Length: 164
Image 1: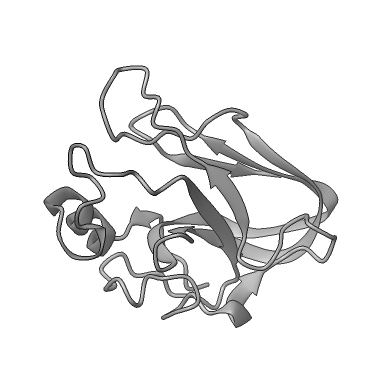
Image 2 (image 1 turned 120 degrees about the vertical axis):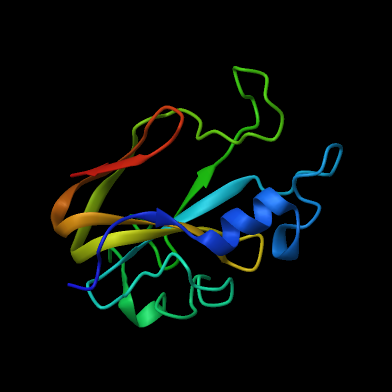
């Protein structure tokens, strides 16, 4: 198993914090906010996540995140190629601008899933060069037969819990 933990990509974090590179202008005061959703794609044990990977290698479909390593559910719409969408909201209850939160429902459930071999996921922005933001190691292999896959986004500071 190549997975060895969960992390935020340093290339994404640095660019977002420094307002340079591929996120330049996205976090500036008064800038139009184009990030409205993220996507979560599942992957098998053949990926080797690297939090220090450059932006090009951290993108969905690139580097270790190739489609031949992706895990999907054959049921129509259950868990498609490219993963599932999570809409975001900027309605931060603390009033901090440009802090995106995962909205309700939380947990987010996907019924009717049949899949084998999911070991982790890639959270990425499909509206911005398929840029990977973080990856999450499930600590083992997830297999489901006509079951419900659940993703729970924890309260800030933010982490993820996966369940079946």
